[in-house]
Image (cartoon, rainbow, N blue to C red; front, side, top):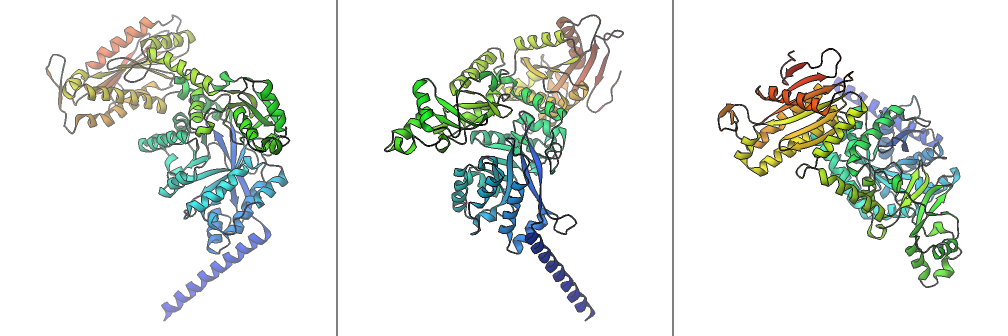
Length: 615
């Protein structure tokens, strides 16, 4: 009986707690006491702030201060719609980015799209009251509950798109429902869930998934945002993978005032992005910017038509609002509108913003041409040959045609292909020679790492040329992956020929880089033996040698500042000596020597991954 009474008392206490929370919820709704904080979303091209996500918080010192608890209870109590409506209005009214061009991301739960009370018009009224355009707003569909009726959701979101709003899907990669939402709703942005971002530099599987999502997003003309970035290594890898935007505590905490990206973070992003895109010839889209006709958004359609009549070679004009581009009007599209029945009478005296394309491709001048090409060719067929608008700090700088972009890329690739390895695609001997000369002329410290496979001929003879080629590609991959983790943005990788590779790095700890290459090589080499347990190999004369299959020998030449200049011949001779020493020892190993030091010109030591350095 006592136990029954105790359980009854506990049930009553829990009921009182639920009732208290429900009362608190009603007070919050009545007094509109929620608040918004704003977390920056940063471009991983330029290191600048592209927008903010508005995050709702309950009243301070309230049991409902947590947004998760607040909205969960609102859904349970059947008042989710009024709470989300209040959250949207609070986010817009508290926005401090009115004078800039940053986007404002506002969360909308999937369940709201099915709510009969979710009607259009109110959000637009609030925007107009603060002087903000719908094109600045991104509705972020969160996964508080899954979408049950995609057809209805598509109709609702399409209505908002026509007004200028954009759509984002949250939690991409966290489950099947988010991927289905991407396929069905065709969002402008996808936000990659933090579970895929956390420690991505330590998990090859996560890296591969995100790399695949980047390719997927580029093909569908979707911008990708990585959430939860908290470590420098995460930021570096995501930038090099080509992710468009980043968000997380490393870049900025949620706050009630504008965030500031530190120069260190900005430089880090820009350097690693340039390193990723350097294969495209080093061209940025700003190099292709050309003058273009410009009209204010309220200019008459008749003015634009007369401009096209006077400038027969002009393919289009950019529509601006205080020098910031807000739309595009292509020649053919305008005259198609006017050529229809009653076209002149309907449109001639209307403003151009009523028929312009409100969502043209707009890119900052520092964006690599290769990246712009991927974005441009991913557009719908009817927009495929539209002008690409180029900005400088958000203001119009010019425009480029698709023809100019493709010609630039074609010329760069042809130049690169002339001297690149046909197997690995890495730079060949001509580019290696140029890179070494450039480093020597800079008179700064750098290291040269020669990578050579041991017993590769035996492997090639035993398993065939196809497997041999795969092993060479694997080696090229592990060199580049190791440089991403332990190197710097402008490090260089080349393919000398056969099973010989070279890396040039400014890493402060090049020996750590050697160990990382050996670790990665040893981690995956067993997969090439088709399940066989290797205990010996054969040398070039066919003699049996006890060795656990193919190994890797690394020769590290560290070039420091010197009174007597180091030459290419010096580096080559030092590397040849190190290679001979390395190959005389079993297993994967590296040898290192220092050149250019005023007292000790050459100092040599050996190290395998599982043994200490021996001087």
